[in-house]
Image 1 (tube, one colour):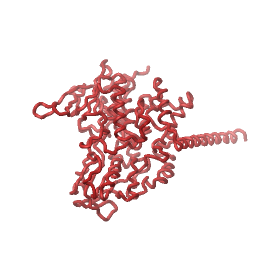
Image 2: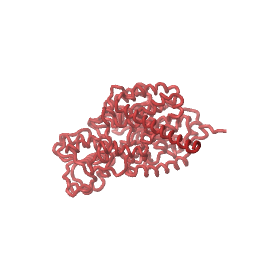
Image 3: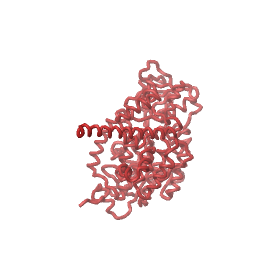
Length: 555
């Protein structure tokens, strides 16, 4: 007799389900991922939930605060196209451009919260100070501190409040605690000004005529350097290990990430080591954009294509071509304000260093030993105590964090409601160890500082498969070939992971057709070319079998 989900699931989850009452849920963070998590928990019936947000607004890093560190730059736009950004059941407005700015993203999130009536569950200006398990291990003790003025004990100290929950969902993001690179050698030898991109908002008058060094190989580094170079006298971008660059668009007003369809995945193009990836690298990336996607020797990547982070802010390459940005490798030595770079004998006199070197992965309110990038099963569940989970932890090399975050939230709530089982601690730890070995092999250049880096299409399919949302393409082919073609030929979108739900199927297909299949000549030509390749492949396979049949049976 087959065991039930409650019998197969992790003991901690089984204990939670055995209570017979709704568990109390705490969600930390009111950004993109926190709102997604809140919506799905409420929709699945776990509505005894509170979301704590430390600022006075939802939106997380998409709230522009000109006078405070954190948040976004004044000129921030998304690096993923709109196709990767909408919620599975709430598309972004069609009036938005392919790459929405921070104002549009924030408006979308506010509309999302209003549409699903999430505000009654949200407590703003509440900082989660500490979250620990109670002594008996039965619940989470969450200590919050009000961040708005006037909430103190009369002596200027904020009043701490204690709350008790059965489930803790961490959605406070990957961009909270800046990495303190300025304390590391050789930067601790620098006598000029230093700042982290966490505090950067826009170029200032003080930068005029100065030499500014931006350190980092991600999109924040590229965006900062691209803005600063219009104000500073000289701008240098130093990328220690180099990086792959890929433009946001491929011409004809078409986002580059839209070409990665399920059709391509079936043929292996979005996998790591397929022959199509090799062809794409040499016939598209490097033919159009130069070796490494930039053509600059100083920024050449130290890993193969699709085996490391891809920088989509390729505008910086154009700035380098115009002589507005100087390309350099890593920083070798610093004496005062003089900076020596790898493979460069002549030093540069630098006035300001801006570090775009990323963030720490630990969350300040959790125990220091808890690290979601290396200790969470599939970047979601704590194997030792799965009543702790994380949403918004996967960093795709191409794609978007919130798109994967919504899938993580959907999986988590299915586990907590007993609809799908979660493996035992031993099974999760075994898989976690195997995943680490594979990650080191697949992402050799980024394994140390980006252990949460994933292949967007592979990871989304994997997470969706855990709760039955991954489309069954074989069944769709025989059920409805036209809708099958829609699913496999459309750009990636979260709508694809609703087509297996009977009540949401028609709406999901309609959203894919209406919103995410643009009338682009180049996109449609690409799909036709892929279909022609399919037919050519099938005809060749059939031809081979016919020849074998003739040779074996008719001759």
